Length: 240
Image 1 (cartoon, rainbow, N blue to C red):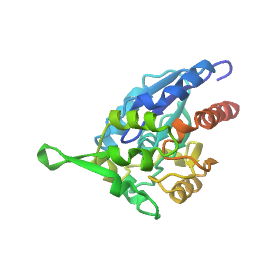
Image 2: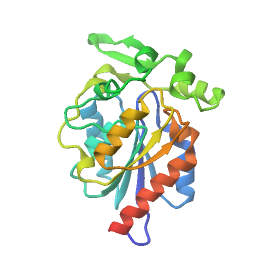
Image 3: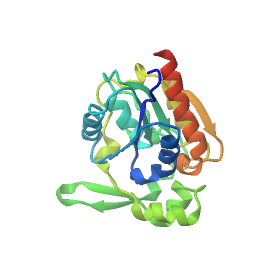
């Protein structure tokens, strides 16, 4: 890896899209990192991970794989067996063990408002798309983001299916074999901080806590986010 930075692959979670990574992507590119904001279909954990796995196979050289929220479960599933992935970075993310789902993990500790925040849209065939109700998006999802920016993020959010959030993580999860880093949102009202710290400690992650950060910690605290991603890149290079 000497002389070449790894590619940083950013994977968004539910109720979001890749545009939310704009600020941190700009900073990473300015610092010399190739960046890919991967599209996450949000249709099912296994199928979402397969799509990410296919994208990763097209990238040459080392990779630092970054997941936010449900995207954490996707990167943990997709990275297994990929020797190019040198580090996993979780941003207020789900880090499941085999058989756990995002839904089961969010219910493991008290304090989440996600259940009361969801706005379901029934789909043909009995499936359901889930959105964060725009009326509570700012308060529950993005409390430390300026109101006008949070309103725009609420408008442009993409839904996840109920299946995706409830699907148990398949196979061996990559955090067992790939070093990981975790940025905790200390005021997160979607994934309780206690749940985040539990998952980070279980994975043996290097942990940074942003005490007053909401679930959108990477939007409200881009400096801390970029610093952790670049630390992961540098430390993985030192190991190689």
